[in-house]
Length: 264
Image (tube, rainbow, N blue to C red; front, top):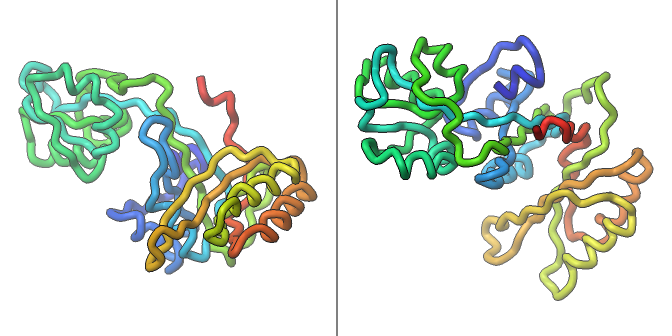
């Protein structure tokens, strides 16, 4: 859904694992990849930060997708017949209030939201429902029993559109005003504070910071930061300032920030 929203009519290659998505991109089996980076309720997708750091890729766009969870079953199945609910663990966690009150059934984690609907339809399960978007019901000819069962209406997932670093930067569209970086600092008192202060002095607006452990170096961390800027001169000044305060620095991409008016 996010890929279609950002790119229009495209052929989508589904993958089981996020690492497979990145492999398909690097092996040129696809032109671009779309991966979720964080959810407004569940938080960040840590694995995807690691992939952005270790692979030669670039973020070229972001989008916000309103997440609506629905209870979906095979046609003809009534709500009272449901004894098991399948969905991705993140989706289940976003519907805790509903599931806590739906005592007639137990929730079981599944590999995918839409996949749970595909599974119950393929096996003609008459006592099982999936939690998934309406598009899944349409795709697999299932029936929506209940709509909007997520705990909070303000439930959004932010996605990144990713290209290979060697690919040309897409032309057209809105001007970039957001920048993602990964950096680490010496493990000494105040080093992170000084790095962030340099960003503030450059005039950029820090919108997110995330830490991830460095493999093989216990208690050492890489910091992922996103910040808004006005014009390329400010962006370059911020990168120069951060580079002076960091041990290593990797620019992950410059792209237009997703419109705030989508959050309604």
